[in-house]
Image 1 (cartoon, rainbow, N blue to C red):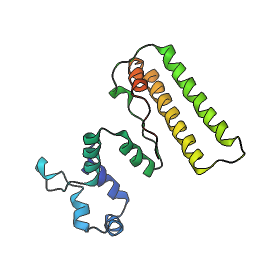
Image 2: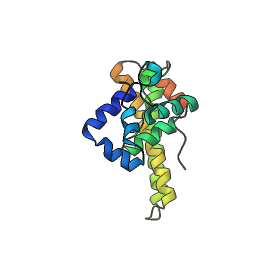
Image 3: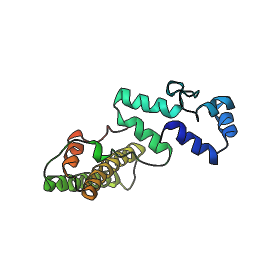
Image 4: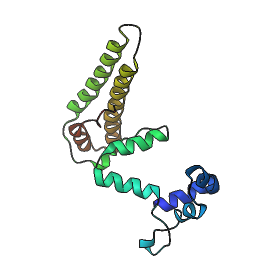
Length: 163
């Protein structure tokens, strides 16, 4: 689905007028976002979804997608089908176990004094996000029968920890 089509669907359930007011933009611009872009023989304007896509392609930084996913209450997980070939299954399962152990160690050291500081909470969150990402890649590969793609995800490592 193209970005303008996504926005068109969204505005069927959400008031475009309210979005315009919330963003301090003209209603006509909001409606332009729902049309095909001018370079596709349409009259639409380059919309925020297009810009986010361009920014991600330009920087190759998954933290941008992670941030967008967090705004919707979710979590970005790289699609294993888009990753190159990996290797053996046993080391990959060991990686998941190690990530889980690392997360538990982080929790244990943070809670040792019966209190968790905001900085410790950030470290716990970062470990949790790494574990989810590694495990999701593994599960998706299992579902697709493609274990070779899991290796690449493990080699790329987790996304950089957030400050």
